[in-house]
Image (tube, rainbow, N blue to C red; front, side, top):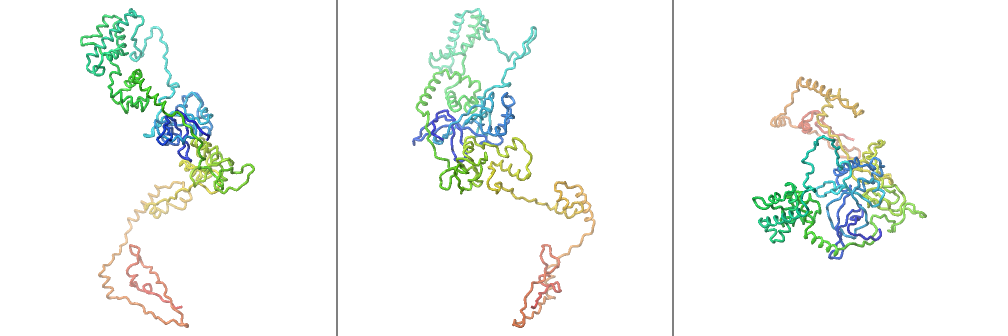
Length: 597
């Protein structure tokens, strides 16, 4: 990018990583640090890839509601490519501020509130143009509709009832309708009305002198007279005239009843000095977001009271003073910053001499690329020729993008062309020949991994994790007992045919009844150790007489063969019994065999 001049309130691209997409921010302030560097205080915008899938579903639901009420181009009229690229233009506003170095600015862009009366294609036709309609709170992970939305559509229009005919009664609730409080055709002249208003102000000043709390807030006579001249006193006086049919004598008697003069105070007088200070701090932090002001700073005040106080506060000298101070601070701060050109991106794929050059069959040149990335097509547009290539994705994937798709990735946070998995979501296609490949591709796309389109024949898709079916002991037992019903070879040839569990259960019940009715074999009891010792004393084991001959040249040497295995019954633990190890079984199985060669 060339050199850039950034101003306050500009929407700009910030680069925090050489491989990740740009951050989109709005500059609020430009401050110079003690080291001489310039930092920008910015408002954060988030992309769809930055929020969770649950919030993305809420955003899509909100978009469908807007489409149903809109009369412009709906999403169904767009192509798959336009739907794919439109998601890259959607942002989510946040109330989060952060400070970033001004040297990380990479360009300007435009962000606007979604105009429901404008076609969505207008955002695709313009470069570096984004829109938003929802506000994202990164602290609590929520999405809310922006309070500044344009209220256009049938749900915001007034329902005008039909005109009543003569003699027809009005069935509407009169209490919810407007009430007449002034009659311009009154018998009093303008001079008489002005004189009555002067009397009302005087009564209000005297009432404040008698009130203790008002004497503390307005200690001087001038302050009490100014408070009595506010609109609340004049509204009460005119309402009193109307309720007494513009009779001055009866209206004056109502202003000064038996209990004392009437005191009328508005929100400006009701609020204390500490509450006013809290309101100014909240207004500095949240702006005119009265719901947040009430929730975090003034929960004991009603929303109506806060809004009424705000518009009264704007008429005071305090507001004028703060406005002058902010204007003076803005004059002393930086209003623009000059961003020079920055170094090439480290993700550029260079040639063998270290300089980025033309690759993949440039005009008039022929060379063999040594980099394994060279020779692969672009992962987005499948182009094989570009003046510059950039490595993209995990290093083990060895994917790359052309210059045009790389700039699109950095600005919009996605690939220009939809991938295979996204096309299946947008427009369902017939299944592939091999369902395993399709499942691998969908699982890989869900994990956000790049899919290699061309290049090495070696598949870049990871194989499934190996697993096994652990058979229970009851299933193994049923295979042995119910062989007549459960035929394993036939079941293996037809794995999708369900097995008749009822028949197996019935056969097992019959076999179990037969086994339970048959006499059980008596179990052999093991003799105690004393009996075995006595037997050994009476019948000592005899060792065989082995003839050992001296080996000579005429006589062949004898070799000792392995002991012949004893096929007697094994014990419970699967070991040979005592008689086998001690040669008590008799016969040839307890002795060693020697052969002569």
